[in-house]
Length: 330
Image 1 (tube, rainbow, N blue to C red):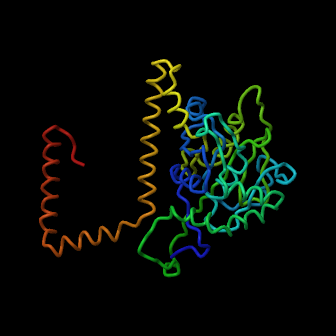
Image 2 (tube, rainbow, N blue to C red; image 1 turned 90 degrees about the vertical axis):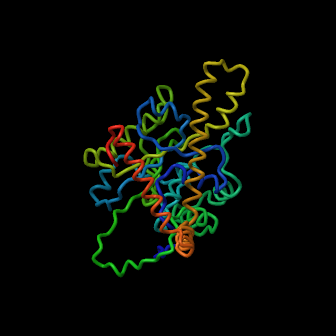
C-alpha cells in the first residue's frame, strides 16, 4: 500500500542522491559514501561541500531538545535557506535540497567543473528568498517535478499490502536524513523536522577547514548510540571528480607518475558511475513481470524441466570442482 502522502521512502545510497540532484538540474556535484571522518579518507574526496547524515529517529523529549549541542537560529536573520519537512518520507530530498541551496554557485574556467543549481532550483531559491521555513517546505512538497524525481527511485512492486491487515505487526524503525555544511563561516545542522537551523560553531579557516568542526559534531552525535551500533549512515556532497581527472589526464604538464595515479582514480570513478547507472535503472523498473513471463514461456514450451535439470547439473559440476580443490561447499 502506497504512503498516503504520495512520497516514497528514499534509499540511503549515494547513487540515488547523485542522480536525484542531476535530475533536478544540479551540475558539478555528486554524492559518495563516507565510511570514516579521518583526514586520510576525507582528503581523497575533497572538495566536500556538505554531509548528509542518516540516523535512527527517536522522538526527542523536552529535556533532550534543550540539551542538544548547538543553538537554533532564525534562518532569515542568518542568511540560511532552510525548508521544513511537511510531508512524510520526504526527508532525504529535503536534506539534499537544504544542502545544495546553501552551496555557493562556483564558476570555473573549465565549464564542466562549475557548480550550478540549474534553472528550476535556481528559480526556486530566488522565489523562496525571504520565505519562512514552513512555507519553503510547502513550496517543495507542492512541486510536481520534485515529487516525480523523488518517487522515481521507489522500489516498484506489483503487490499491494494493506497495513491494517497486520495490526499486531511490529512497527518498523524510522530513519531520518539531515544535512551539515558551512554557511557564512559557521557550521550548521539543517534538520527539516526542527523549526529552525542549528548553529554549531564558527569555522577556523586559518587552522583547518569546516570538516574539522563537522567531525567533532557528527562523532558526538554517533557517540549517543550504543557501541558498535549500525543505526546511521553518512554521505558527502562533493565536487564531481570526473571532469577534473579527465582534464588532468590530458594535460601535457602532468608528469607520467601522476598520470598513472589519475588513470587509476578515473577508472574507479567511471566504474562507480556505470554501476550506479545500472542500479538506478533496475530501481526504476519492475522486472517481476518479465521473470513471470519467462517462466510462463518455459512452462508452455516444455523447456522448464530441461532448464531446471541443466541448472542442477551445473551446480553439481561446480561443487565437485570445489571439493576437488579442497574448497568448502557454499
